Image: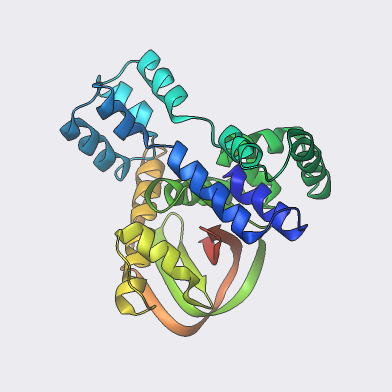
Length: 289
């Protein structure tokens, strides 16, 4: 995640080229392996156990390592060891810049300081970005006093990372009363909280979400592609409904829907957060009544 925020900053300030950024991203992908695969290779998990944990991640808002410990497949020390083998994405990106002779260590440190200052990021938010801690960085991008929005948006972003792509970043969002887009895929919820959650886009960038979740390439933004995005919104809302049930709060999910060249209005204010998945922008839309 840090690579997306900092890499975009380096591009905007012409400190690296698009080709150099792409090279660094390839370096990260080659040096960061999924935890389950490492555990299989280390003989700590069987293929069936890894698949089971991957499936459970789609049913509950928990990390792979935490689920493995709960199931008794791994110990806390096992998870710590596997994480050390996986590598720190922040350090890997910095290492990629340096080893590829794109920037020196001094140039990197100077650019990081400038990035934090220019973006007006506190030390706490900066560390959260470096650690990939969505909850820690979210208040810098979502301005609201309603903690429910932070909770649901954080849940949605965590699941983008888990099921779509770990290479995401976001810009500051805002509450709006109307929003138009070429492609809209969302799902209403009713009950104690009436609202909706979904994604919109004005070009084929929404395919980054559709392809990533379905694990196939659609090629064009058609009904099948938007249906994949709808399925993802249903996954997120399902996890949110489960989370709320523990608080004795009940919501019901309506069938997801998608629209071409549509407008959302007349439903009161809702939050629009620009997110970039593999460098492609879509807007996350969230309404909580």
